[in-house]
Length: 311
Image (cartoon, rainbow, N blue to C red; front, side, top):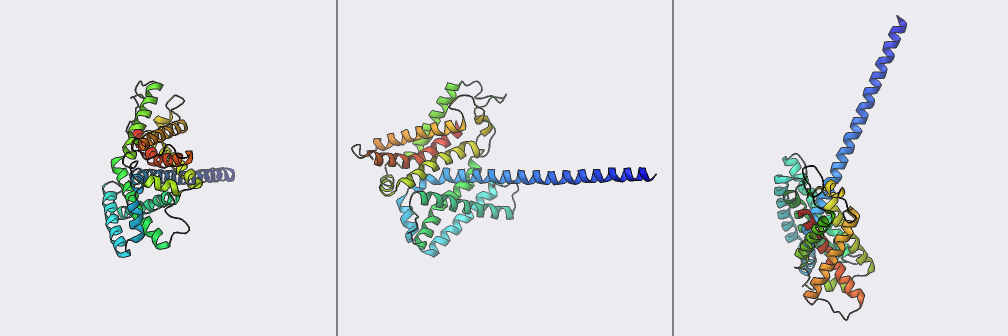
């Protein structure tokens, strides 16, 4: 009998240990899924902010207004934008549940993400430096962050995650598209999207102004931001079927090669538009020409990424 009781006790302890271990593993997996979902939401929000905010950041008036606007006016304007973000978050927030609390949290997150995204671009474009007065930097940052924050909220409504992107019912690429056809679709969509966004920026003076003022470090930042942002928009934000795009065959259908190829196409579109609007001096040194093309390539590459989302 004592042996039997001891055996039952040992078995009970093993069962309890197994259950406790299962609970710990379950909680760890739940935390992992939660953090993964949070990261995906952040990537999607940033992608939406850049999609809608970048075309408006190449505006001299926005830089000047941000440096001269009165604090009371800025706060009032910011309060209105917060209300708009709250309304958009209530319609379709980045969280699954929609309550008053989550609506306010989503609106605050949209404003915060907009400020971070705008700050990154303003620093790379040299509009905020270590020598910029705090009042000027703050006003410029808040003004420019407005379209970014609205883009964060609008993206979840206009660009919902979807599971179909040139895929057939069997999940294969393009419903019978060949590698050549898929490549042409990507290139064509990139050209259309890049031209649509860059067309309104190419004739302005901002591109030439920035090209004269920015140094090599800034231009490297512009190039890196262009590649990273377009990659995140297409392959990380879940605005399109990222898994389907990753599984597409062909040397130019890999996420890295597709992103680089699309960026080169966007640069060519930007260069063509600059020549078309007579915004470049062909007799100037090659670095000036390259800087202007790279600067216009930022909004063009984001437009090209948006075009591929719709393809």
